[in-house]
Amino acid sequence: MTQNQKLHAILRHLDYISNHRSKSILTASDVSRYFFKEFEVEIPLGEAQRLCQLLIDKNVVTDVDASEEVCIGYSNSTSKALQNSNFMD
Image (cartoon, rainbow, N blue to C red; front, side, top):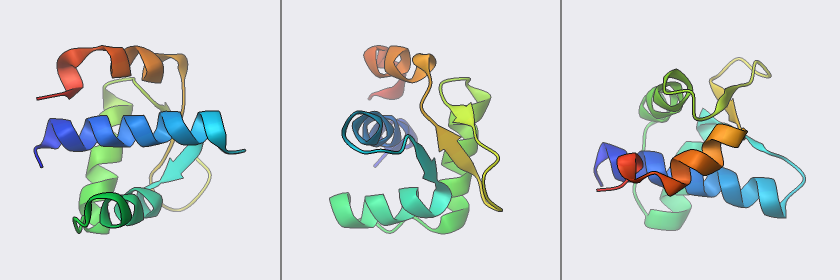
């Protein structure tokens, strides 16, 4: 998977959990587990943290200071980014 495909997958998953579950945040650990479960792709925690930080830096998710690891939250910009082709190959 390319980096943009990974970023798009994270945004889709964040959008899904914000609409279907009682939480709207993901930790880097959640992201790492999601990729293994959904795509059978191992993403080390460090890479998951880097991908989450990229989304924070691009202002498409909220930086949630809720744990010792990188944690992202759904924002209005998340849905806009999902509609934008910048995160797809």
